[in-house]
Image (cartoon, rainbow, N blue to C red):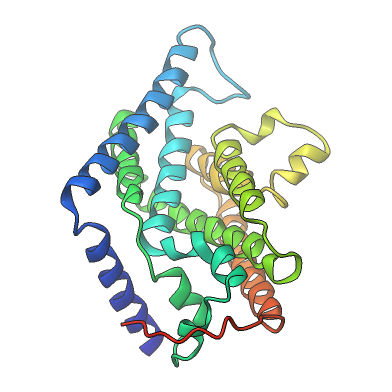
Length: 258
């Protein structure tokens, strides 16, 4: 309970800091919504000429983008600090976090909130209105939360490789950009080993494809796979980070986090 209260307080403080400069916040918010909707409009144009892609129609693409935007938005708003994890490890900047009697990984993740996450959440709302089904909103929220945990876990896993291999920041960002992009497409367009990769190494199918299939036809098996996979990735990320932490070399920096 204390850990949860600490998390809520930290996220609340981080959000207030991210929206404190109103002009910058509004510009980033509007640009992110515009960027997402422009991308969706390309799909809309595509479906004016083609019936489906891998069995998916325009409403399925909209649902996929809504879930993906919700997942990514939640991860950026509540766990935006995780994006700098690789640089923090490399520069020996973990010291101010380690001296505090709080959950280290949670503290790092929730130490920053990124305002563009709100633009992604607004995209989710707009696309749900486009689809026109509100009965599925609770399920969309649930799978978006699950997807956000997979996003965060992949950030942690890839960034934690810095403990062993040094600077990997450019590789990390490219990998995670690829995860976001691959999640926008129906995974069933791939075949063979590539489809297996889309559910494991690059778990795009667990963030975009499987949740949409769940909305199309609800089964407890699919829901169990989605939630179970999210829990498994979270546990693996926790393991990798703390295993790598044993190799951490202090930057000998003194500081305080308020």
